[in-house]
Length: 288
Image (cartoon, rainbow, N blue to C red):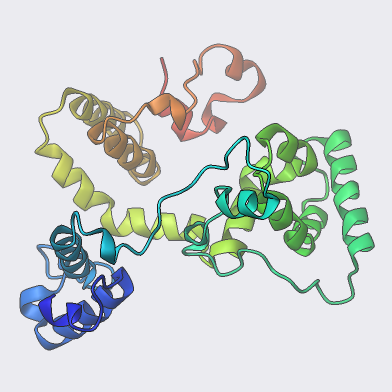
């Protein structure tokens, strides 16, 4: 860190990462992030980069001369200079909002499309939703419409100030359904979220279960008890693993389950509409 400060008094995290990457490449057995089984975690140098950056911030604490970010300013109510007001207005959208995205805001329209044609397709989707609801008769048509209007969706989401959620839902109703929200995520980040999540659970779910078995928290024990009880009753261990892992992590981190899961009584209203064997496992897992 002292050597780095000879070139820059406040190196950024990207500089710390570059140094950490070289250190780990030279001494992987000592510094690489690994599991107990010897499996490399992530890029292998994340922890070392964070430690270097933390050390830099600790040494620079209280030294205002090396700050990169400036304190935010609020516009004065009685200021008559419009230019100064604009300069001091806090930004709603910052560069950090784009981290991890590969298509934050496309600028080129799809081939063969114009602004008018995309707006027509947007209105067509609203009409389809009003007539057929979130489960349209022609799913492939909505797939195509959502894909081609991605640039307009990003404009609506990225507008400054940010849109009201209810207004965004009225404008893009299919964006609030599981299928097309995941499709939008895949385009935005370049990662197929569903298959990636399944692979992660298959690869690391058992390890999380083993770790949680040693946890003494009451809420964690309750989730484990339900999981073991259901695995004896149902031949669906793999189907139960995904919601169990999520619930265990939420219990361990003391998160509110109701913010992510809908708890219903499967013996009441749902049974009238859906056969019991077709009720999603996640609901069966939360049966009251």
